[in-house]
Length: 401
Image (cartoon, rainbow, N blue to C red):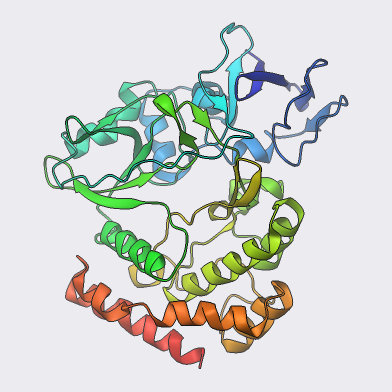
């Protein structure tokens, strides 16, 4: 099978062909809808690539989730096989279905419709009635029919209010469940704490929470903001900076915050507000030791007629976990280390984002009002983890003053 139909919502937009010399995409002659990707404007000329287009490659799993695909018994672990297997439920509003499949995908495009906010859930710790092994094996058991484009071991889920429990599902889930890897203890509590601190600091953050498997393994649940409506069939356009720049997942660290700012100016409908959010999020990420804010963690979201930065997701103090001690995943003023007030407040805020002193002061006031120490002490981190988190935070605060 060497062709896939690409859909925007339920509309057939065009066909992707795999040929001897690479890949070719052409919009259908009668297609008049939204572009498949924002950097693929609707035009009749064919597009050619030697490898699978980066915009699609960025929707495929990496790391532990790719290992789950291998564990499923698949004989082909290439990008084309992954895309074919998972194309019915890709992140965002795009679907890729085999050309012989007559039925349109179940997901509807949400263009023009404002994203529906879900009612808040407050699951108890025992709201995941399965073992860690069940969770890890779920993708293999269902044939791995969807993708969450994650590097961690995770599964798709819905939450049953009637049963007060999560249920694992094949497609159109409303939550992502990520289990804590054995080699990285406290990573789940770290993410939960960092997300709460971000919310306290005034950032727009994906709702997250903590549950446990029936055999006591911590699991982080995170809401999927690209799905909403009845049966989670309403799909929203979500594209990462990696996709918008045409870069593969392997290149997700090969970029700069300045490049993200340029994308905001090019694609967002309210760039001044989004540039303020960019600065606020970069500053918070630096203060909390997040060296994993690469290009795949910066996404734009179409929300009705508005194109804006998506809520922040996958927030973590990676420095204290030993993932990477680099201060910034992306270049800021051609550097990733030794950042200070001049780089962040004078250069990034004023020169790159065009913010005035009043807006910068407001962001600093929001950060300063956070009960950092109290939140850290109340977290589930060990005493050593709490101390490391607070010491790194304090040292970076000093550099801003």
